[in-house]
Image (tube, rainbow, N blue to C red; front, side, top):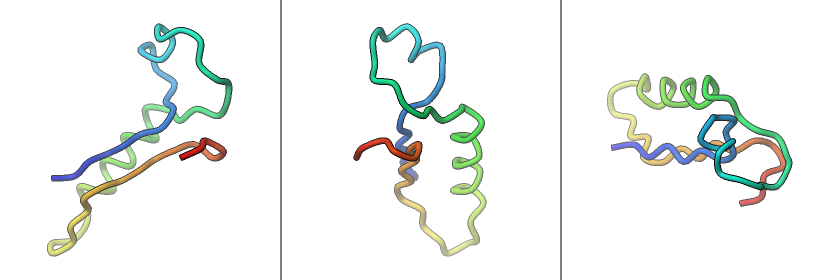
Length: 59
C-alpha cells in the first residue's frame, strides 16, 4: 500500500473551499506523475509514503 500525501493542488475542490493562503500550487498532472512513479518502482522496492508539496509550502 502506498500513501500519496499531496500539498496544495489547483483543483475545483480547492476553489470551492473558500479563502486559503496564496502560494504555489501543484497541478493534478504533477500528482499523477508522482503516483505513476510510485507504482512503477522495481520489484522489491516498497514505496510506503510519498509527500508531494509545492516549493515554499510549510510542513
